[in-house]
Image (cartoon, rainbow, N blue to C red; front, side, top):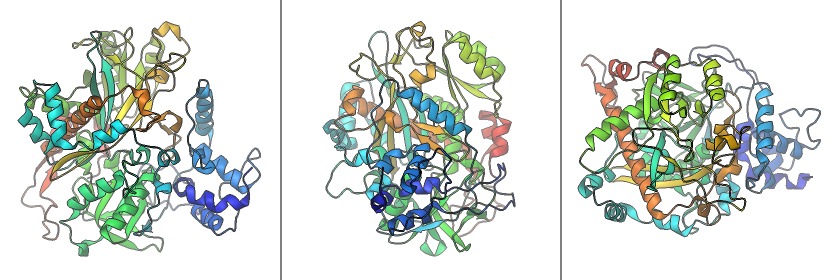
Length: 616
């Protein structure tokens, strides 16, 4: 049992957890920008954490149930465990996945689903200052104690010139000048991204990395061990801020407003970026949470300029915003803004958070790449499929496929179909959007989709002591500026249960348990938890499980760069010259320079439900 003397140390390790528990109850309102419903006042977990740090422990704001631990520390630990942050409370690290752990995970998820919804409403922005960065707040505890694998460290130290030389040496069909130009490409709208990739092979043993999806404003910093223990306290946070964001906002004069980090999840990383930005820019930075269900959000837009509300209820103009809003960001951020936003919302609509348009973007870019020996490799994808057409397409792929809601992320809205029951369950659900994506399924050799390019199946992890192989994916984060692209961070994730040779061998195991790798679990509209026991770090312990070599990492990096350029080019297609009658402002020369082409977007992505969501 934890004692009260441990309180200051405990508070030091879980400020991000306190932020995630600082919630208020409210109504589920679909129009947060218009609704006048006032928030309900609640006690603040942040104040509770402050009292712990001072040695005066007060009752926690989350009322314990009759089965809750009796002490405040244990009560808080119980509350944190419900949102997947028990490792922070105990000062340890997420335990390695064990056989049988899945039942506990399922039970916890079921209990969380039954809990009453508590929405985060009426929150105010808080100020972050230079010197606020503390590694314990912005990295998983096990990451702080991890030693980067030498092979991974070697990859990150290569630089684009050596990557270019190695890749073209192994792939002589690739045009070296074309690839060099792509690595030096300067994106206009999509400067910071992360791709999820599968390591797959064919029946003939041809291995390659393929793109599953590419995300705007990706997570990953908290899971990446430092490349050097000397002088690299900020890790990848510093790379994204110093190399990408600072260059982007250099054109905005400080007199135009202040700086802000705005997020709707992952406060651990969002606050890390805020602290690094404050230190890099030598000025304070505002940190705000912006939820779609909040009827009284701390953000408002006035004539294209973002304003942010502080704890004194005063509004501050924002000249530049680092956006970590990932859940349907187009319903809270306008496409054309005076406030500089990284990444621009058009990058999300063009593919960064829109799988339908991403598939289009890859196809268009692959057409441009003909003759270079390069291409974005991806599963076979059928776009704009209505619900009634889905069974026909699944039959054409041999009865195995992946169904996706195009605008969801963090593992939500993805359905793996390998048996009739899974298809029936999908068809029985009500879905908000009208159109879906059908993709070929990458499974095991005997149960993967049949496509025009043949069958691909997972290489998977190195077999464990029980000879179990798990599906894994790799997240590769990149950032870009006027000098081109560079890798920033990477980590891997594995599925809950091992891959079976034949589906009949495990009749009680769902295909998602064998194939789904995403760690995020959605509790309700505004709250998430993480199954961190399935996280695989790029350290000496975990990396060897993946069976990857440095050439696989190079291949993943090249594929990520190609996918990001594809989406950036699509973003540029969707922004047309502004009509001359639109107002201009010499203080914001980029504002109304281009406008979103709704007509083209509707032709490429004909989904009325999505079009109604976009904030004009």
